[in-house]
Amino acid sequence: MTRPARSLDVPGLAHKAPIPVGARVGNLICTSAIAGKDARTGELPPDAAAQAALAFHNLQGVLDAGGASLADVLKLTVYVKDDSVRDAINGAWLRCFPDPRDRPARHIVVHDLQHGMLLQLECLAVVASDTQG
Image 1 (cartoon, rainbow, N blue to C red):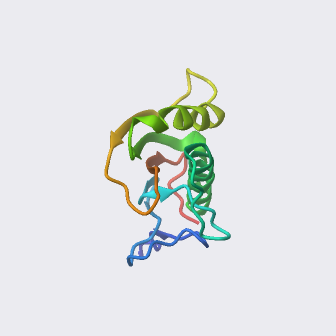
Image 2 (cartoon, rainbow, N blue to C red; image 1 turned 90 degrees about the vertical axis):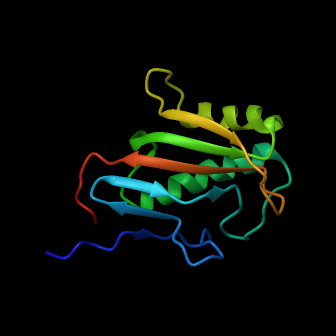
């Protein structure tokens, strides 16, 4: 039996390096770094709130490409330029995961992000079905 292709690609979210934005094997999805850029224009907004909103929107796109949704997210790692973006992250987080009894694990890491990036998301999701399609 041949294993289905595992790379996930979303138009406008491709990395400059030769890596996919995510991968799925069985019922597991793992993303690469997901930035808060506009997938249509490639532009990165200058403010944290806009980057956070776009990053979570882009995360949904990657999950969709893998046959998953935000409900399937098990853990989210957020890389931030500095602690000043936490409020923006929390705002987007609460819009995506409003029920405190149904939120994934989350960890924020301060990291030396470059090129105007204030934050990046990295996700591990477990899809209810292990059928890739």
